[in-house]
Image (cartoon, rainbow, N blue to C red; front, side, top):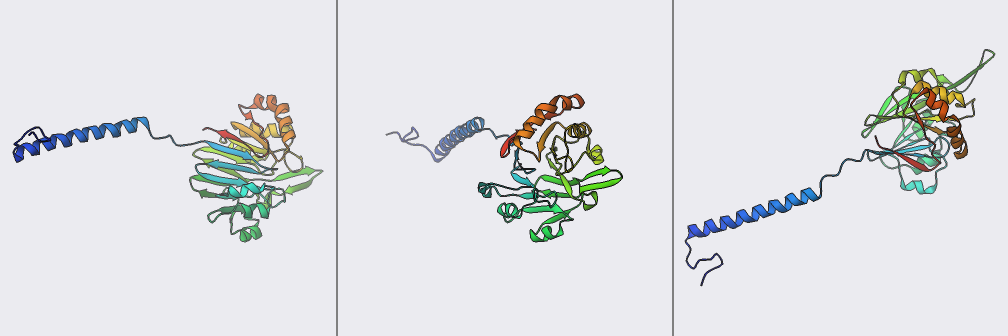
Length: 273
């Protein structure tokens, strides 16, 4: 009666050779199976998208590279407690930019809270990091650089400054794999923008009132100076943002290649660098 290997009387050597052939066949089939699996399920490309959500007033949330950053969050719906921050950036202490309750709502064990160094009481209260213009903080793979922010108006030789330059309050530049976003906080068209001309991908500039931020053609002049790829208005209502973009797009594109975008509060825009 033949055995399973096809011979009634096989020597030890013959059996070893036969088993070796079977093992080789199994190995070859196995390689084929795994090779097929690799072809059908190739490695997924890394997600490089950057999601920018406009919040109330000048508030913004940026999500990229697995990191969530808030800038000047106020008046947040309670649902945002499920979206804790990796970093919170505050530009200055005015109540429409700094809100204790919202900051506390967004906390997790590793949240980094960043304030102008001038806000020493808030730095201590939130166990935060104080920065001056040009200081940098690294949060994961994202680099955050404090930049200049001030508003000064001169009338008959008298300076009116609701955001004085000597306070060293800060705007912020957020760099994500080479993609740069400037959040201007409350600032006018300051001379320091010349130093970062053509370096920003997105600029978030505040609309009015003119004594505390920019207005009308002053925004266009700032965009001409900055030469960004995109402009998004902040520090304004949904209606005023829509009206501004509609009214000034031609002027903006006459002095730059910038694309103006308006985003409703608590809605998002995704950039694909």
